[in-house]
Amino acid sequence: MHLITIKRIELRTSPENFNFIFKNPFDDDVYEWLYGHLPTLLLYLAHVILELFDRVKPMDEGAKMAFLARSTFGFHLVETEESAKSVLDALSLALSPRVRCGKCDAPLAVTSHNAARIVLTETFRCTRCQRVHYLPFSWFF
Image (cartoon, rainbow, N blue to C red; front, top):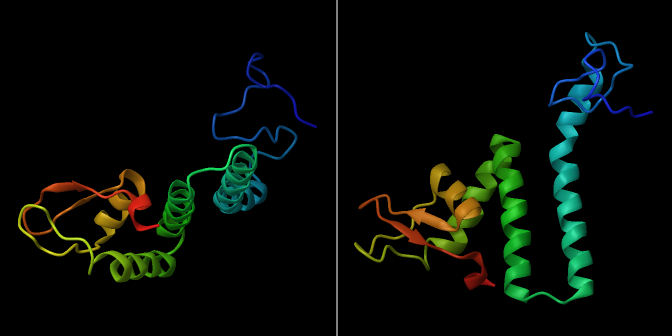
């Protein structure tokens, strides 16, 4: 049962709560399970929604692959240290030999900071001259 709990002060819940109002507030098992699995669920739902939109009107293949890569890499960057390292290795293998700084010609160094920039903003910062460059994922698909 889900109750609307924003209007009455007696039932109001905090913003990070999923309205488990009948749950003991000192018992965190449901919250820990839910917040532990929510990123995976949201990643799955984002991919389902992408496929549904693609069935309505086929997407540009480069944009579709870029979304899939960015969302999956972004998920793994925040999941565990081991999965973040695998993303860094994959991005280094795919991009470092092909991408160079437009100002000083240094090869792309995929650091944790650059991996997050590449995935979230499609940019990277040269580790030598500190210049920021645009790097759209769709160029590589």
